[in-house]
Length: 74
Image 1 (tube, rainbow, N blue to C red):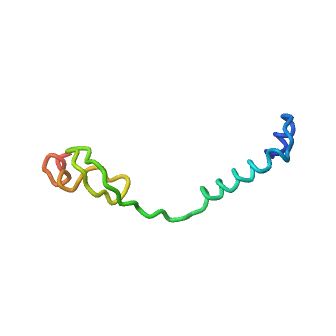
Image 2: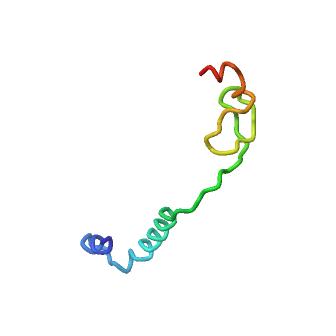
Image 3: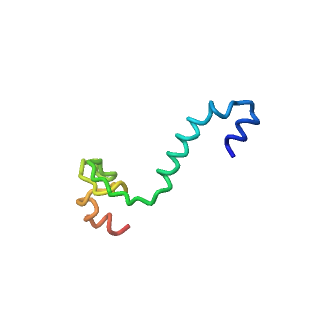
């Protein structure tokens, strides 16, 4: 379908093909169901600003701050 659209636009299909094939390869990578392992990374705590080792990308508050009564009370 893309080659036809490109052809109607006045582009030569052979000039577009290498780019289109690369885009198709990238789409295949995005649609494959590969489990993504959590990435441990050093981050700054959003509460105290100290650095801590975060086990995954969504962990943004350190263990010390999560254990405070203020944090647990919501």
